[in-house]
Image 1 (cartoon, rainbow, N blue to C red):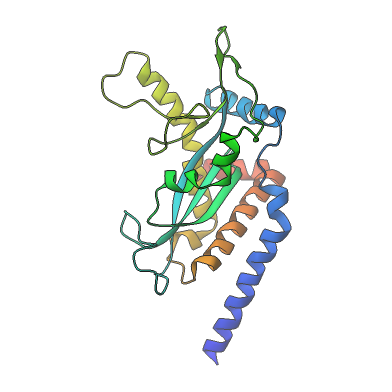
Image 2: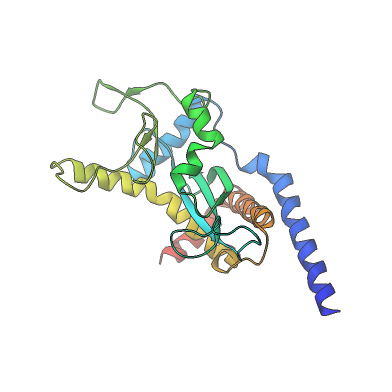
Length: 241
């Protein structure tokens, strides 16, 4: 009887997660659709993190799960456990603009990005980034870009820190600013895990069901940051402190 009740509870839990995702994903997890919306994201990065022209920060997070049957080492990651990957683009206010959930744990973040719809849109310029324009007190046009970690390839629309070897006097300052801006995506993952502590456990679910749970949590995270920003910022200060 206990097993039947547990199975029923799990079924209802997964149906609840799917319902949240289907109801809210298109509303609360949205990439900007035109240059003005991207510029709003970039202005937030400039005002909050002193990084101009940044249209988001991208990174991946491994979500731990039990080894799926008959998958060998497909989900076994380099850290030493089984996982799927949450690859996400985050704005300056810790909101998820775009996410790709379900990459094999054995894949790198850059591999998942290279196979993503986001990269395709960036490459064919259908994502509607603003046209290049000068920074303050300058006359050279600089493209708008996404902040990334060193694991990603350097592209015109993606920027990462310089290598730590043979830096000039200005380059460590550049690296510091890029790292400050990119930290928002790591912080967003941390906030997500502290709020929904299922991320701190090993999920006893198949990957497709873990994907449902992760996407539902992202929807709720964005929903709370949109509807109750003051409350969420107060909780963030407590989380930092």
